[in-house]
Image 1 (tube, one colour):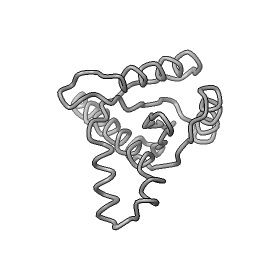
Image 2 (image 1 turned 90 degrees about the vertical axis):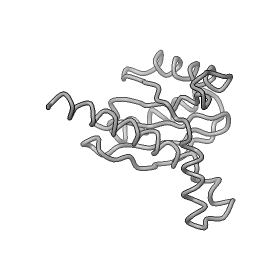
Image 3 (image 1 turned 60 degrees about the vertical axis):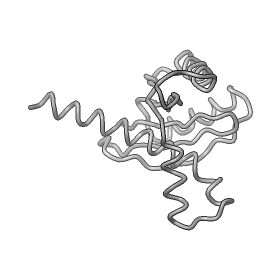
Image 4 (image 1 turned 180 degrees about the vertical axis):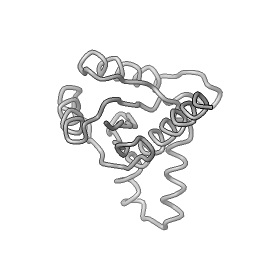
Length: 144
């Protein structure tokens, strides 16, 4: 079973999916948001297609760890998912993931228009990859 990473925003939701072993995250697309029910329908299609067993949503904390309006909106979205899905939904610190994605795309000399199309899914892959690495490190520590 796989995990899905989401970079939730006002206009888009970036999507990433793990491999079956839970080692790597791959960017899979972007949802252009309309309303929560339509967004959920698209997410359900991804969940079915990739056999997702857990969703990881990036939590946009401020650099000092405090919460702001973006965190409130994200938590409301997470609660909506928890109330409408039968799989676990967890939040994961996403600080600097969008900046990291932007830097990589700039280094690749990608145009502003192309960056705009892929940055959210790349940020979602960084969120998910960070989560996967933390979970795998915890498993290793428990095994030792």
